[in-house]
Image 1 (cartoon, rainbow, N blue to C red):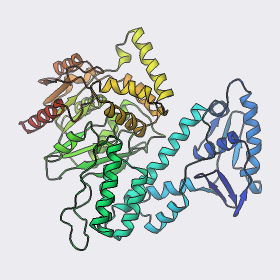
Image 2 (tube, rainbow, N blue to C red):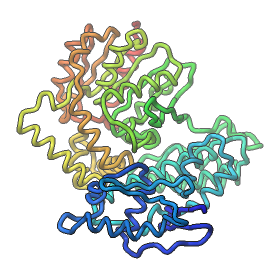
Image 3 (spheres, rainbow, N blue to C red):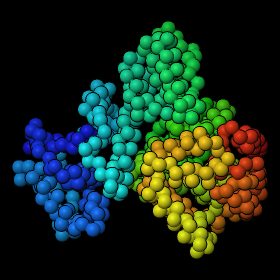
Image 4 (cartoon, rainbow, N blue to C red):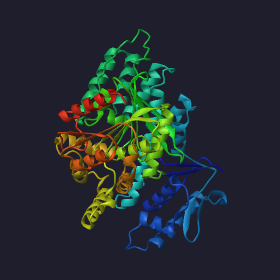
Length: 524
């Protein structure tokens, strides 16, 4: 007997082509969905915490739900839903889900366009739309994360065929539509859709699409990309019309998928930027914060950057989040780039990662640029009152990050950018939601709190530029000054800004680019 499991749309089980009646209890269906999409053994207590309120008898409710689920999935007397005194698991070699088929297609470089189309058509809809439990906070966070993972898999699949020049323009146009539907504010997706529409149906339709996309970006407070066709021949060849940013994926030693991008001419001098939290390769490219820096430097350098594990286009789930992993991810990206020696840029906690990498690999880092840097997390220096305050922030993060109410994220955003305009804060609020989930946000904050590279500063051997905003509310200027004093022969530069994340419109942003250019151009 074969078992088909439908997770996209309403949860369903099909045994040998026949739909099996599902339990009427939403919690029971949600339990099955969680067990199917979260392989492994789960303790009974963790499942109770996930789906049941303490005042009830959660263990009894769990037993009741399992009794209703066993007849659904244990067809033909095959035990697929197993349990013992402490744990529960779902394991079925003969079961296939639409979720797994889509994930395999997105990760299989040999998947044909026809196969991808069939999978896509079968997987339209919202993941587990009849299993929402808004009053169960932990389950809601898990479901939000699972839906985000599915959307990223769809983005990978649509992007592959939207940018594949070997297939017909009308097929690329189809996949561009799918891509922009899932990633409506991705500049790369928008430019690709515009160019494919131009090749498929002509300039008039392409300009109409560009107008529609521009209005969408502007309404969201985001600067739209420049929609322009250059050097397009009569045959619609788009070999030179793909977006400048080339996104690739690599796998780390612990099996985590890391998204990395190369921008600019490979013949230009390189610059590698270490990841920092709140990166998203696609959304960053059109952001009001860092995109001016990336775009400006990519005119004269090959800029290589990547999304940290747990955020952006990199894997969100099933990965350790810690300082050692951050450094190892940078090592993997460097190896994938093929560069032997290069300057390295680190921002915020990415500066600590860069310091550690430079100390470990003095033969590879030619110059080091640090912005908004800190060398140790608050765990090492905080007073008891500061510890309570930081712990309260983590509780607020877990409860407020993914909510529709932006009040918490607004408070969080203002510590990064106190001089931001309301529309810039609104943009950053939504950017945070799309970049990671509440669970990972807390895990990041915990990982950052334990950073300590104070003993590594004296071991940095390359020329170093330390840049810091004089009015930085998140990391005081004194921290940057202290770091510069302890790195041999480091240079310190202060910016007239109060922002930890520079806004592209402020003079300090242009000053920062000038400082970086001058430093990179100077002899080692």
